[in-house]
Length: 106
Image 1 (cartoon, rainbow, N blue to C red):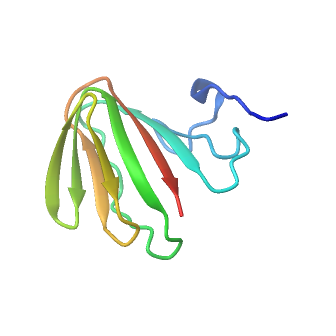
Image 2 (tube, rainbow, N blue to C red; image 1 turned 60 degrees about the vertical axis):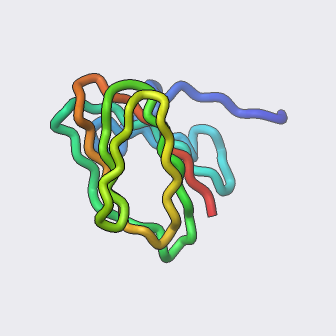
């Protein structure tokens, strides 16, 4: 079969509001995550220097702020930001009902 499909709502969240789809879609390299949260949702600071994974964050609904290497990037629905593997990043939602898709690969 040339494709796999999955509904993120059928995947057990790895953390509150975080649905990792790599295994459900049988991805070899690409990671895909759906993140949902309200204005009080904050992600953990991290980077991907060890695994070389760059990430693209696409905000579908709501408002968010990405802190990348100490620089604040405001996101509105429809905005996207790509982050280098070695850059430190933290995601925070600024509005209730926010939803984002994160894709990453080496």
